[in-house]
Image: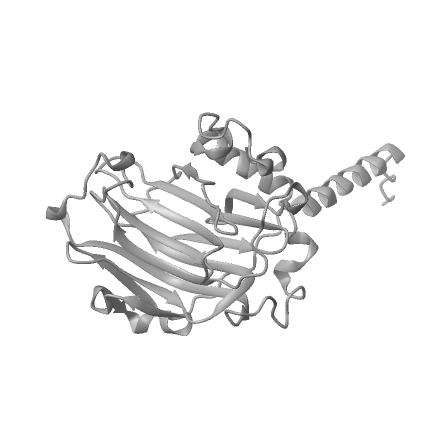
Length: 302
């Protein structure tokens, strides 16, 4: 039987063209942060207050923070870190959680503090949770963004992560970037780069501001309020509180080129979040900032 004729030269060009497109697609796909490693609570964290309001399950692989009328509670990392990837799986307070705040954040230890915040603002039953993020540099904050989520964060665990390096801070929800804060030192904007930070989480009553600006108060008849945690992942450059650098700084995976900026896919996901789920962005608040903050001119997530 005769062999079939070779495909026309134009088909070879088609195949080559399709191959180049495939390679381009692969090359522009997101390089996600490394997959978090689930570890027990005690490996990376210690309680900070109201120890009796922390419940432990499954050998410390899962914990619950409890808030009642007497007190809330919280925990902090054992180490301090300069840059890294920090992730927590959280199931937020269900039902009527108005007035409560569940926080997960990085913070330095001095008066001109740096801080990188996730704050989850409780709701009245049936209303959506609000996720507030903020970045403090040299003691200056007031960079709030607020988003709704595209799922019910009380029904199951979801991952909330912070990627922090010399180039950018990125807030992720289930690997979807919801906010980016670029290093804009050339614009005169301070950036957290020389103060080690510890990680903290807490569940507390903030009904003076948390829900509808303090109009909705905590209904203590619904107490205790419970937030659940697991994962406890830390992959950071550990330093003493006084150190301005650590031995592996610049050599870890998060320092490499792939993580110096978001790529096209990540920017599209970020834009999707901001188009559909952003309810407040300080960069758009002209009554509060008649002159646009310098970093808002360059960040692509306005």
